[in-house]
Image (tube, rainbow, N blue to C red; front, top):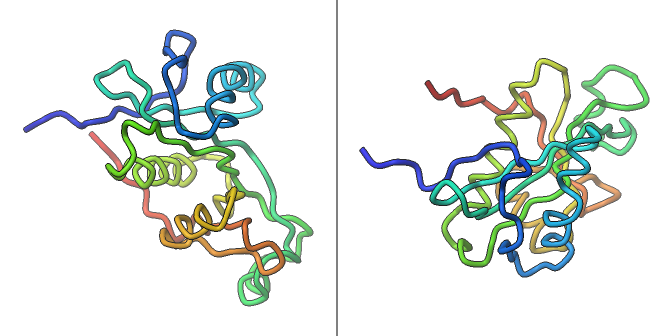
Length: 168
């Protein structure tokens, strides 16, 4: 039995972030310059996929958020309690190094993020994302996310639909 090609772990200061290149300078810069500060301040949690135990092949971030009940599709909102907001978890960033694109790592990181969100002991209704463009929105829709009616680049997936996977 071979080992998994990537290991997903929380980002720490020992990880070398300088070689990471997703093709998006804002995503590269965030990982290099901001991610550890945001994690230290408890603004976000950053998880990295390591190739060969050391090279960062991709990453994503999670943070607490909320969705306005009125922004949800009416068919979903009418089934929820009448609070003004619904607790959610925001995946703020998702990036894959260009050397690892086309290997399914983006989907694997999304699955890992959903697993983290679904296993939290603090309740959240959905994992939400703000897609940077239509191609990114199509990626999330492919994975079952639903666009907000008034904001097609903001998508969510109810966590009740996610079955956490447990290893070990």
